[in-house]
Picture 1 (tube, rainbow, N blue to C red):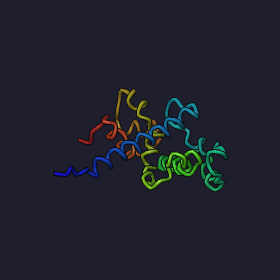
Picture 2: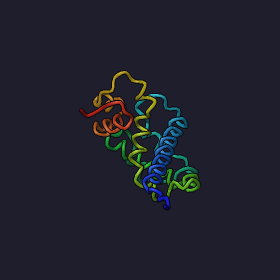
Picture 3: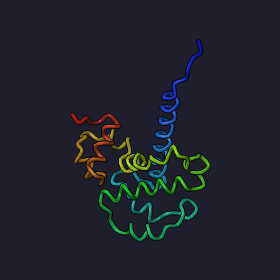
Picture 4: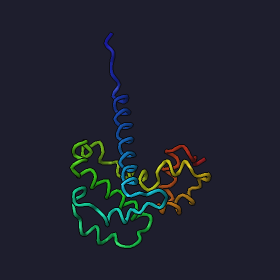
Length: 153
């Protein structure tokens, strides 16, 4: 009898790797900008883009001046991920491949609500996390659930 491989096993390994890489990229940006507590200054990260890392996008920079609301902060984080995917290093590690196209929201959650910060908190209230990290409540809930720190029930 011939053994049949299960595509879901391969897909699961690929997803786990992509997820790990996205988390590493978010942590790398936090270290690069010396961010040690919420809220993450995603506005500054965009405003201080380095030409060699991200393509210039003056229109986006103009729109991000000043303080952004929670939904725009998420969009700014997704834009950072898009720039990382298109960067030289992103192309070297094949971040631009189709498997990463839908991971912008995961990147935003990892960047704006790093697991090490959330795990160190004593309270895991969705609204408290939402206010602390300046993200929409549904995104805070999703992050807490994926880290096993909160249940909707």
